[in-house]
Amino acid sequence: MSLPCRSALALTAFSLLAAPLSAFAQQRPAVLAAPPPVALQPVQALSLPATPQPVGLPRLQTQVSCPALQQRLLAALGGERSVWSVSVADSSGRLLADVNGTQPRIPASNQKLISTAFALDRLGPDYHLSTRLWRLPDGTLRLTGEGDPDLAVPQLQRFAKLALGSGGGPGDTPGLVTLQLAEEPAQAWWPKGWHPADRAYAYGAPITRLAVTSNAIHDAVANPPARLQALLQKLMVQQGGKARLALVSAATPLPADAVLLHEEASLQMYGLLSLANTESHNFTAEVLLRQASGTWDLDQARQAATLWLTEQGLPTEGLRVVDGSGLDRANRLTSRMLAALLLRMDQHPYGRQYVASMAIAGQRGTLRNLFVGTPLQGHFHGKTGTISGVRSISGVLDSPDGTRYVSAISNGAAAPNTTIGRVLRQAQTAGLCPAV
Image 1 (spheres, one colour):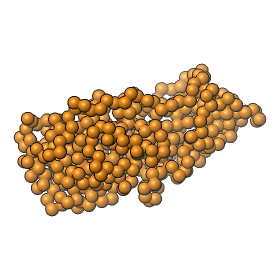
Image 2 (tube, one colour; image 1 turned 120 degrees about the vertical axis):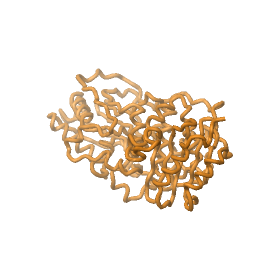
Image 3 (cartoon, one colour; image 1 turned 120 degrees about the horizontal axis):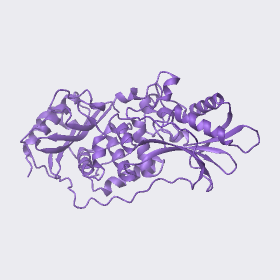
Image 4 (cartoon, one colour; image 1 turned 180 degrees about the vertical axis):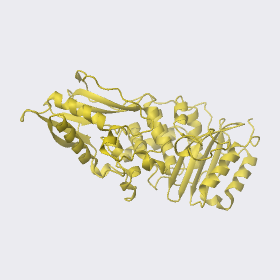
């Protein structure tokens, strides 16, 4: 997890909760009037046609084809080559250089490249997360969500106003609104492998469906449903009403004749991808993995992601997908697989959005302060990764000889940032690996 995302969601006062948290958040239009209720069937996950097999597209070769670059990378890694995996490919699928490229390693936040590719392919570029207010047949209201990372007080104010105006409740107490909050069980809020110490920080906040400000203020919110209930109660009192709030399982089905009263949409897919890839936002990456797989059961979600990678024809030997963000140290990826994924996604129908969602060397996101004033500035779109003992970077590099897909993962390097700079500069060198 890259350190800048610790502060991405830090808020210092209750009043700041009114602002969306992401750097990419757009102004949300004001709701002038509640839309008329619409009788709908319970919402199902969006299902797009399966992406065709990448027949005819370049696939990553298995033999190194550029000895000059191979030798330069070996020299750049020096005596630490045993703790590094580095792979470089071009747009025709040539494996230009590869050092320990099939060695599974802990990827840190390079894991997000899988979650975001999976989500973009499965859900499409127009997809957004939804938070919805429903009226059940007995008058009870229910709030459902999909993990919008920008859900904040302005949206809750609208939900509170509409709930009070609907008169939701079985009618036993006049003026009392009965509102159910549909949420995942507490044991599912964190991937099992997340260290308890990480769970206290904003970057390790619990993953829930109804997460106000991504379940973080300065640090992680330990009990998200309790915070949500307190906020809703306060907002309803401010508007002259009162409510009986109750938690229900997110697995509780909506009645077929439930009526949708209001819906709040998240940023569209590009904004979500940018949160995950540019700012390395763990919460968003975890939500995208779950939504793309169609289930919030993490075991099933990671199996779906693994199957998707196999369907793309990628080299998955040694692969282990454990979470969506890379905070779990049990994840295992290879640099060769990541280079192949970047090659595949750059030629995907939505590939431009995928690459554009990454940080840019010397300009944006977690790479904004790296490689400033060098030939890499503005010419490398990439995803960084940092947890204790792990440093990784993978992305798309512009070179005089064409596009390069580069992945470098270190587990135990002494000065990984310096080595990464050397690797990228060698991969960008003109004339080493001319196109054929």
